[in-house]
Length: 376
Image (cartoon, rainbow, N blue to C red; front, side, top):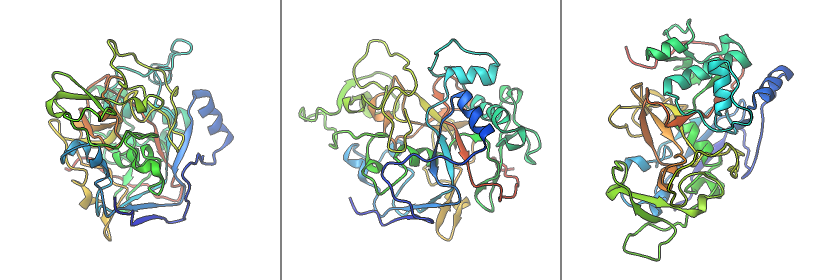
């Protein structure tokens, strides 16, 4: 692979393994502790991370062909800037989801995932959690373009359009409340947050596979074992891959199981940022839109976010019928758990994806403005 040609911190910070947190008031920290929320800072406050490559073919040593489903957001000559944000160490548990959305406590010790959550539900959860930890004025999602009315459960039931507190002129979120990550933010964190570290080119979040192209005729390539799976619309010839190398990091199908079992949160190894379960365990909703019968290339909306050749803090395509989900699930094949694998799901679908909390940390200097997610 050609060398990485640009990886620039506006304020340089190079470390292959780090776990940093933002400074908060004691009240905020106490609420997070009570709710079991742990945040990992991915891009430091008041810093911008700029990433550009002259080669994007590293994944082709694992997968043959140009397949849009395996198209990383970090592509050749696609110059990207990420603004300060934190991400939750773990995905949202059933226990926390029930407390916030239904105002009731789940059974003691339940640390599994909610199984009936649409993208609209995820939007509402982020707002409701923001109200509890911060206040309503910090909510990110609204039901009107002037950002006056916070998005609610009733809005989600009616599948109303979601408006996001994002300043298009500055390419910044204007609220500090909880939200879904963009696909760019998700993949950057899943790959360890540092393109100069070996983990950046790993197949999964935290670990690698054997590094060979799968070839059905070559029986020596035993690091990816195929079995036939009928009805698999996402893979040529219906191949499901089994890769034991992710056993320590993931709860996906690293072995053939008669009955897939929903696993508990945070029981596997974390990646170098300290984030758990980003490959396997459960798919995770992102903000980025997709068509209901397919998905756009990752650069489909770049023109809206490009300034002086750099795509800055992009939100992805302006659609709400379906959304990109990332990370694979406990019943996925190993190929779906690759950090660069892309899948879409209809926004009203429940039970396939969970929530990885994200939050912008630019500070209070940013002026609030409005941004409409769909074109008028």
